[in-house]
Length: 216
Image (cartoon, rainbow, N blue to C red; front, side, top):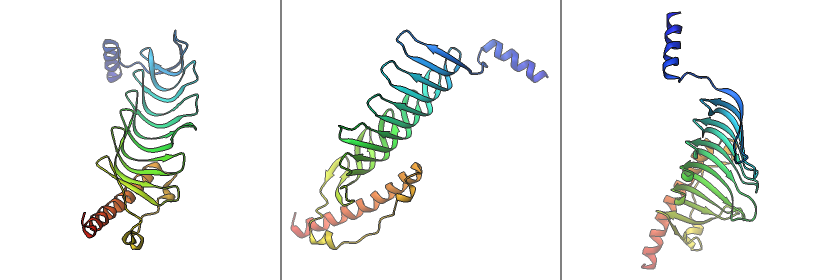
């Protein structure tokens, strides 16, 4: 009983023990929030809807997207994943609308940008698998829609694999099969990271050997 009385006194002095309650908040710009509210702002689970059709459904902290959530746009774009302080941050997937170059991204984010390990798939079903830095390709492998290697990226620069040479045609190497992890984004990212690492190391070594033979 003494602990409860003491806790109540502290909460009263600091005004910091208010529990989240379900409410509806309507703003002057027409946006509407429905969900848990604490200290007058979104905190907990809730849905935020804009007049133009955008919508966020997920977790909040101190009036910002924070935790797991889904953000959709009226043109068909959709992000599902983690947020931090109002920005996409952590693991997440982004589906883009038709008419653009990119179809889908699955991987890591930081401050609203691709950052870390991730796979970006394009409308022609080619894809880049590897590391990203501040939204740009950093270290990875580019595949055609048929799964053939089309190039590698090192330090943000695209490098031709020279796969038309006899040396590349005869070279064999084993890459892990990541298709079994497609429903588990964390394991899929780890597997694709290992796959791109193996091929990038092999491609780098073979390119070096080819250059030596060609006297470049």
